Image 1 (cartoon, rainbow, N blue to C red):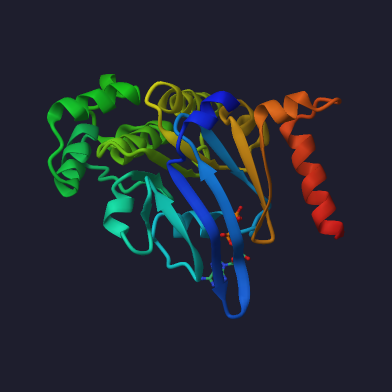
Image 2: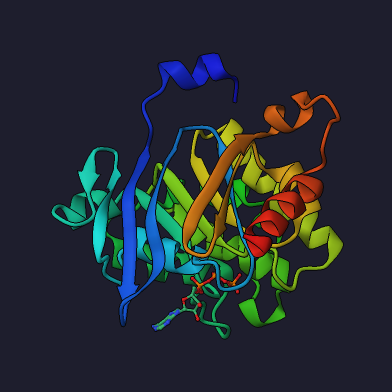
Length: 251
Ligand SMILES: Nc1ncnc2c1ncn2[C@@H]1O[C@H](COP(=O)(O)OP(=O)(O)OP(=O)(O)O)[C@@H](O)[C@H]1O
């Protein structure tokens, strides 16, 4: 997304001083950032840095010790229902009934979410590229297809933001590529704000517009893809990441 676009757009998500304290230790320490419509934000950091804990607080799976998250202006703390209805997320493996077909899974989920017309379900199936197999049982699906069905579920209620924790974990190269294309399409064509965490830096460089790096529970820095490319000695994301995390480990 260009800077000009960003200036004219309101953030979909505003994370402000988000903190998780357990037994006097800040697992997440005053993290603040924003997500804008139409961008893919890569959430990076070493193992144990606090990425999943941040994401779990953002979707209300665990409570926050301090700070807040606003989604379309609604606070997760004080207006949870209003806030969460704009969020789609896959945090662990998507919940799927393997003995049912993809379509039966979506219909079952649609009933739980409320009234979702069949036309919306069909539109989403097409969007995630599952039309040819949607009437087959999920137990016959590849991992990549299951992930895409999970994304379809997460999109049914038409969220403004999609949060994916390690969506490419375990996928083969073709599955990773399909996931990347889908994520890019959801941002570019549907205008979603997408937040993705992953350790696959080369993949993240292809998938994301902007990045945040978490080290020891703190958001060390955020930068855009064009920031990387405008460095005098153009850096790859991996080179930038290694510099950031090495400095931190010597500090
Ligand atoms: N319930 C808990 N009680 C105590 N410590 C916890 C709890 N949950 C997570 N932690 C610790 O919090 C830190 C952050 O964990 P988190 O899972 O958020 O990291 P992460 O950045 O997602 O790591 P990874 O890349 O390995 O998935 C880790 O040190 C972890 O051991």
